[in-house]
Length: 129
Length: 119
Image (cartoon, rainbow over the protein chains, first blue to last red):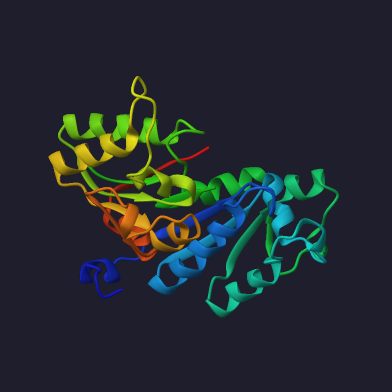
């Protein structure tokens, strides 16, 4: 923080982080979560989106013992502690995978693709992975 | 316009860094400003000076370093992503620096547009 331009801290932009991939198999989900947790400290307007296979990142009862990877799904619970409250999940992606909001580790706002598109269009910065 | 650039892939498996390099060079040639280039995920491999592509291949590590030097671009490698991939100051090409994810957020705040290059 100490290297940052002080001006940066007075601007509030809308940052959206878009997760489209399964939690394991690639590192994108984990490293995106790391970005969000850091970004939350900057007093920006942060939202996080899960769509396509990204909805599986939030699935309850993940068990990674068979693949030797760290199960980081509990960390999503920290988003609330970091005041990241705008968490959107695409309705169609959930349905296509036989999931509902009740299957997820944290409370989310389920949005249809059309509505999600409108929210995306309002953002200043969209970071996808 | 003032651009921030985010690169999420390494120099070989994906074209993302090539595309980002060409975008950055073209933007500069048109008189735009590059506020920062931030390397994340496997993108941190773009800073590894030990990388030795075949001689008839382009060398993105040196291309980025050269472009950065010519235009005084801030080339920032994410420390968390770098450490787990063995990218440390000992192997860092000149012109790059290692810093925190806050530098990415700051680029998003300061730049007019943050362009993401990934898979």
